[in-house]
Image (cartoon, rainbow, N blue to C red; front, side, top):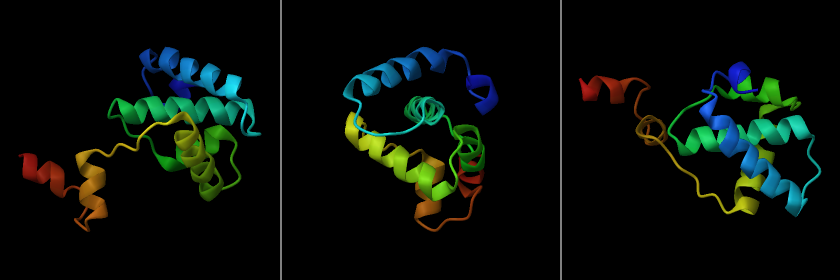
Length: 106
């Protein structure tokens, strides 16, 4: 799945460990593919990597972006994982145009 999401293979082990921990809690009825994509997404986010939402929605088998994000956020809460934002995401939330962060770095 890492390759299909454009993630390095090093993310796989940590994502799989989260998947197993969640599986033992067995708190939500989510198909296994979606669970794996969500855990890879969480690990990638933790390491500062970004994923295109359309890609994760499609690879997870979710019917919509909102379905995927609801389940992503629920799993994050259940697992006690705090939301992390990179500088680019914070800039967009503050209303800056995408790309201004990279221009500011130059």
